[in-house]
Amino acid sequence: MPSVRVIGVLRSPFREKFGTPRQGNLAPGAFATLKVVDEYTPEQSLQGLEGFSHVWLLSSFHLNTNKKFLPKVHPPRLKGRTVGLFASRSPHRPSPVGLTLARLVKVEGDTLHLAGVDLIDGTPILDVKPYIPDSDAAPAASAGWTAEAPFPALKVAFSVQAKADVAAAEARLGLEGLTGLLGDILRHDLRNPRDRAQTKDGLELGFFLHDFEARFVVRGGTVTLVRLATGGQMHKKERRTPPAKGG
Amino acid sequence: MPSVRVIGVLRSPFREKFGTPRQGNLAPGAFATLKVVDEYTPEQSLQGLEGFSHVWLLSSFHLNTNKKFLPKVHPPRLKGRTVGLFASRSPHRPSPVGLTLARLVKVEGDTLHLAGVDLIDGTPILDVKPYIPDSDAAPAASAGWTAEAPFPALKVAFSVQAKADVAAAEARLGLEGLTGLLGDILRHDLRNPRDRAQTKDGLELGFFLHDFEARFVVRGGTVTLVRLATGGQMHKKERRTPPAKGG
Image (cartoon, rainbow over all chains, first blue to last red; front, side, top):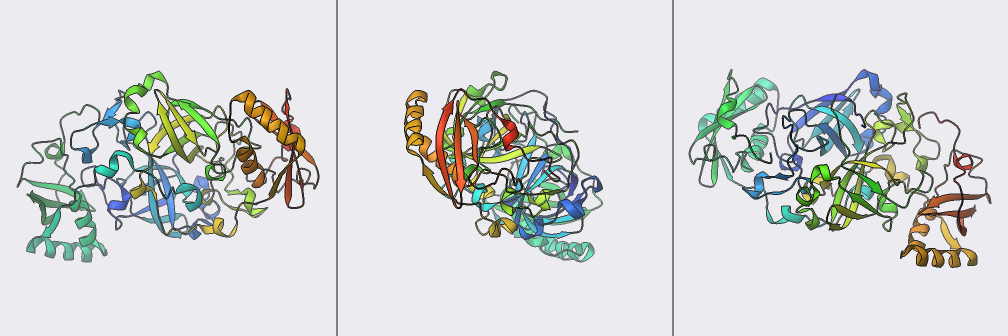
């Protein structure tokens, strides 16, 4: 069997699957860092990477718990319909390796500063490759089933409390752009469309981001950020679907 | 350590590294097939893939023999200059996983028919993913050092003998487009620019493709296909570089 190695662990604001963008391009303000371990002598092995604006991250889908191979999956944006596993980007694959195109903001010593990342904090990274437009882009490609199934686009609102909480969180964490990131996460509807309990209109739900919990409510086509809470514990139960056939 | 599995073995016309295109887009007529093994129930797991025009192949760089990590590499088109490993697509990586964008010609039962493939015959494939233009393309990306180092573009000529050999090989193998494929392979100069013996002007060299050996000569800026020979054995010695620092 081929073997792979971890070249570093990604640090991102996403604390759990719920609230992590489904593709990197959905949240361009999702910043992350990757420190390449000393074993791979980053001061040499990263030379020349700074000239590229984008990189591929090959990552380990380390949170997979599925032991059994399931050939059909339910992509969230197909709302219940299935496609073959290899026609999807589901993490539940024979080789559980993720492929993410990220923007390379800068290289600083042994650390890559990245944006537009759809990976949870702590994800093991197996490889970084430069994005080479000539060989990595297919300008006239057809997008298969994804062409007819765009990601949801809810209207996003912030409560008065949420606006104050966001300003306070930005000041406390020394961040900018939190409003944009929260908007991107919420806009694409992070709920699982197959989970009826979770998708009940008007139900308050929460997801963890940085060190706070973002509480929100979806009513009709509008998602409202209610507040950011600190000191909370993840209540995984409320956002877990029943064991899914086909991941 | 994360683990990966082989979902099938690629069949391609390329018999050895020498003569295998350096990127898939350099040889759009490089056809290949991938039969997904029964264990991964291709009749289900490939459903929906036929709607995509392009796929990612994650492959195992199974011919790597380097045991030691070398942080700098010599990409052929840099003619001796080095870059960091992670700023390159060199196969000699901590996780020896290749990333190839291929055109999906068709899906036939358990088999993908592919084009524009830069992988040697027998390459173990770890994963197939659909190419999703919205998340996999960066239209305004900067190409780093590759922007200033285009692949060589020799003028290609065919001897009278070679023209006859190509026509005979096409008839025998039931192939079309062999002239184009040979032209693409030769045009980008398959010789290693760091190997002085190999790059001697006027030296006849050969590479194996399908079941024949293509013999060629480079003189100045022109490469001439001399003939296609059958029944030959690979003479690896003539096309091997001395053990390279930095792969």
